[in-house]
Image (tube, rainbow, N blue to C red; front, side):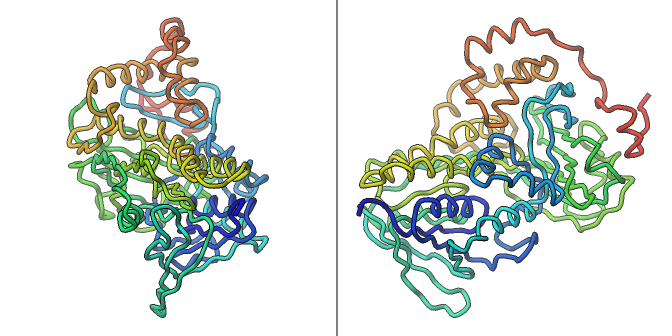
Length: 468
């Protein structure tokens, strides 16, 4: 075999659809195995509980998706998505104070996750080259430790089993992936795993936004301050399609997440600033409160195995899961799809899967360190990571992180570099470069802000009064 001909993707969510699209660009046939029934429209489904909370597709990932699916940005915007320019279109209370709204450097796409998934899935499946096996569960890999030859599946309606053969299997099954167990069953060593668990929990509710607010009012983000040494509480107000606000309240372990409707507004008032509460106290709630515990950071290291079977890859949440509060999951999956696309464009013979997996895994390193290192700073975080960057020297790293955070909210050029890293358009190593260190010393700082940086027109739009 000179290259793969048929590919199987496990999972039909965001990462799975991007992977299937990439495979279809290079292979003759592609099959997606999906446990759920995929909705015929922008609707929620059981297999993606995280979809009921706020999402952002950072510009680093958005540009990759646009490159794979030209025009998808315009389709999302036409469907009601908002293109937020950072930091002009965002009002943020960071751990170190209010962020100045500097001229835009990067952007993020905001809409409900069902709309995002549906728009991308509809576009990818439109030409009919990809077959989707819905209500079908993958139960084990076929082949051996040297080469994967397919996957054994079960029809969840009839209970019937079947073996699907493939030249390449890509695990995008998400948080429920059983890859570690499957590989051990083939005689391979256990894949190394790191876990940083801050106990993050989320409660979300949709509201009817004031007229024009989803287009003209900034997104709002009120963050906790880890230096207070108590459980963190967070709140965001994100513009969504159909003139709605997505309001997500969250907390670290011990923060008493509000799961009842009568507790939602009081919790918002308990945040470090009452802005979120001020906004939602005047508008109509459209949905009940939906709560989830999804904030664990977990990463596998398949690239560390000396032997890796040909015909197998893993990306998306199957490979690495981040605390959703940082918004890096979808962009990381897009990075993995881009690495897969590049690898399939070259010779893909024996050993290529291991090389490709290393490239895919490299793409999750920056978001992994960003999310895990931030979470470790909070009380009650359970750190079960062996990554030396997350164990020794934590105090010195946190001191430097606090220094950068305190500077970036008031220094425009420092903020530009930090935003590039957060948007995944620049490597995190940029924050340790000589150029950045020099910039930290020379860039002029603006004065501290004592209240949310909103214009009078913006406050009038949503009925806010000056705080005096």
